[in-house]
Every structure is written in C-alpha cells, then in structure tokens.
Length: 351
Image 1 (cartoon, rainbow, N blue to C red):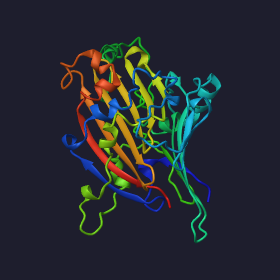
Image 2: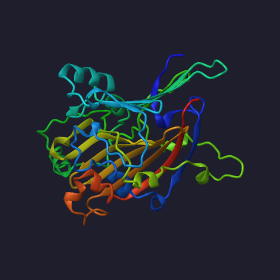
Image 3: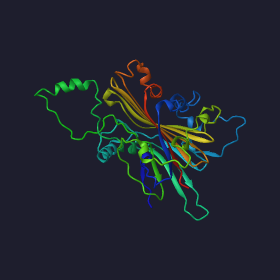
Image 4: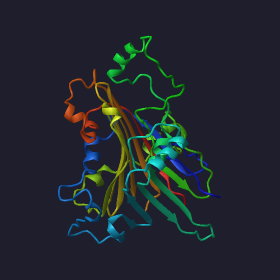
C-alpha cells in the first residue's frame, strides 16, 4: 500500500501502534526552562557548525554513528536523520502554493527546508516485510493546518480602520472566508507509515489527545502507563552532542505588527534524540501565542514520547508587566507566557 502523510495528531490507532495520551495540569508539566536550555547551542558551537560538534566524556564508550557530509545529518541506531535549510520559495512556487493552500503565504517561506527522521524495522523471522516510520517537518504541511481567521485577534490599528469603514467615500471589499493572517498552526510534524491507511492533513483545533487516546492496561492508570520525557538524561551536560540543527520553515512580520514563525530544533546524543518544534506568534499590543511540540526517543526502545504545550497570554492583562525584551525572544517568552494545556503522548514504532 502506498504511504500517505498526516500530522501525528491525526494517526488513527489502526495505522500505528499508539500508547496512551494524557492532558496534564500546567503546574505538573516539566519546566520549559529545562527543556529549552538544551536546545540552545553552547557558546562554542556556531549556528552553522554545530552539526559536526561532538564533546565526548573520558569514560563514555564511542557510539556507533555516521555524520553525513557537510554535517547535514546523522545515521545512528537504525535512524537516518537529516536536515536541510534552503533558500526561500521563488515567486512561481509561492503563486502555485497560494492557489493550492488557499491562504495568504508568509513573507519568508522556506518550502524546501526540512527536518526528516526515518527508522526502518528489518524483516521479521516470520518473513514479514520491513516497515518504515518517518517523522518529517515541512513548511507546506505546516501551512495546511492554518485555519480561518480568528475574529478576536485584531491589531491596534484595526480599531481606527473600523472607524474609517463607516465613511460613504470608502469602498470595502468583503472576503467571505479569510485565512488566519497570524498563520497559527498546531502542526506537530508529518508521519509516514508504510502499509497503513493514513488520513490527510487538515486544519484542526481539537485537542490532540482525542485521536490518540487508548485505555491503559489492567492495574494501570493513564498517567503511570505513559513513558515520559527523560529529563534526567537531558540534565546530563556531559552527554556528547553528536548532531544539532535548526530549521526555519516560515516567518512573517505581520505587516510590522509583530511576528509569526515556525522553527524546528534537534539534538542527537549517543542514547537519544530530542526535538522542539515551535510555532511562535506575537501580535504587538495584543497577545503572545506559543505552540510547542517536543519529541524524545531513547534508542533501542519502541516508544517515541511527544509533549505538546499550548501557551497564550494577553499583553493588556496577564503579560502587561512583562518586559517587551522577554516577549520578543521565543525561548524567554516560553518561560513566562502561561500554559493553557499540556498533553503527554506515546507513539510506538511499527515492529
């Protein structure tokens, strides 16, 4: 059967073996200060040269891995991981994508930039064919999940503009279905699973857990049945960084009214990988919104841990006393903007 693509949140249980999902109270979720700090490159690693960097403790065994030429990826423990940061889309490509997606595109669209992770399970002793699992981040798929415009989000200038529309000498063009001009997308990545039927990408504002919930086994409650992100491993600053990369999918300054961006960062250590995919929105004078999706996988295990966090704060109320310098930095803002929900999920590799 031909493989198809979808965001992880839409995988039906029939397509991939899934673990439980659980919505956590914001106060019970691990600190973003911890997780974000491990995705910020050390001062000795440049943004472009970090992929080749490696720091090995004296007592650590040499891991079996292969770094791709020019530091574009790594092969390790059955995983093929690669990243590409390519130039922005051409005008011709933008015109085609605008027609295809039916939305206004971000000013800077990196349509060919990707982060791709692939794992292939070998054929079984019973002769079952090999099965592959892919997690890919792409700008086009991210934009497919941009929905209709939120009427509650307006820039400060919109009030004055609304007053002008009452004038008889001003002609107004009405758009029946306007796309979300903030490009808000809860895109968690695109999964391709061979030999399984997969739904298509579509805009969705439903809780991710709705499509992933499976009851825990006998004697287990939902929370204890989940494999969490191993923050103890991530706290170990002695772990070698075998591969590190940042990929920008799109960015837009919202006509000088703020910024919207989607970026993906990854670090690969000898025992695991860790990913942060972040949509960041700041509408000046209005709000800050952050959609974070974190992935953690310990090599040799079947579970891929995903943690999804939604953060949003109003600049006129909950964030009114927060310095603008903090709110302009996505990493610092993620430690300040209140969490609205946190969902922990397990996705199991096909075997």
